[in-house]
Length: 384
Image (cartoon, rainbow, N blue to C red):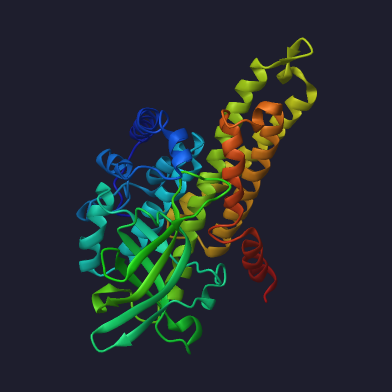
């Protein structure tokens, strides 16, 4: 990560402003409809790519601009701050999970094949780990890639896959040796044009409606050695090694979502009147806002420190788990208490706080549940 381009404060703020303007023009007027459609249009990915908002910390030789990780975070920050939770998840999977997988683990052929097209939005990427009977316990997966004379035959099913409906590339975790436990898991790059691939239904959720979340089916799909990502049997180890960034980007999204919710609430309580005065003048309101703003600022400092650790190559799995746990739990609290300050209007869909409330709930589940985060932290402190 030390080979990233240098960006000063002025350049960073210009980039942030360009992201905000893009969202105002290309997302805000249409997002409510996309929530009803339960999917964003495919061409939105191309627009993000055309504006340089995808995979931006990937080196220029692979289609990115070699920007620092913190610059890449700005896209997720502004999408989250604006309340587009269903969009933030898909973008982070694409740019902050799949792209680093390919950059860190892929062969030169795989990098050249996929990364430039991911940067332009020509290719949308997804990660297929979760199965109907295997969520946080990835070792319990049933999807198999059986070795055959000319490669592998991939069979099985995945579920809850973000970007599943649009995906052109799927990184699939599958068992290549059912008797080897975690050492029998291998990662594959799967082109969704291959015979035997099928998308199931776009799953209905209580929140993040604009995010396409799908079932995926694999029926004896022919794969060869060039589709193996970073070695047979090494998949579980690689998934664990890449988790710190995944959990950090979820923390980044969570804390900036908190900032966005607080901004909306501050404006509302200074305009809404009750008993002849603004509700922002009530002691309960003032103390709630003060408490939430303070907790959010403390969380922001921690997440910023984690960003610096990641850029220095020093962010460990435990610290990333702490960030994900604390930020996602705070997001749920801020969403609930801010909605309460909106009163009955907070329960109405026309107010973005209502969407932020339901969107926040998944943050404590995906990327590792809060309970799994606590177990990881406890094992580090207390042992098994």
